[in-house]
Image (cartoon, rainbow, N blue to C red; front, side, top):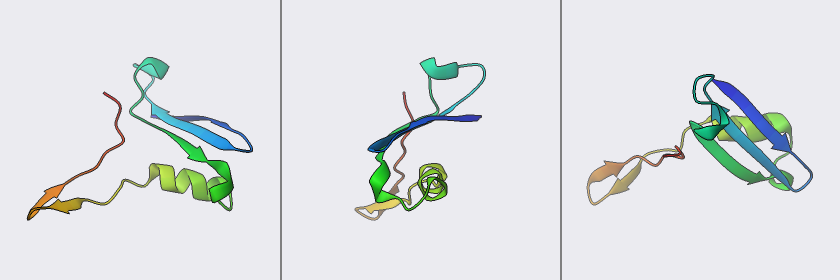
Length: 68
């Protein structure tokens, strides 16, 4: 997996890609507001941390940011 991104003053566009699929099929991608984060490290940490499961009617729904 490779972490690629375009980080600017207003937004950070990050993606996890595989060498085989490349940019055409990212494993995960996000467009985050740069000003919300104290540092690049904090921004990347949030991007790489999977979201917590969400309970739904006694079941657990796992949220993902995976691209289809």
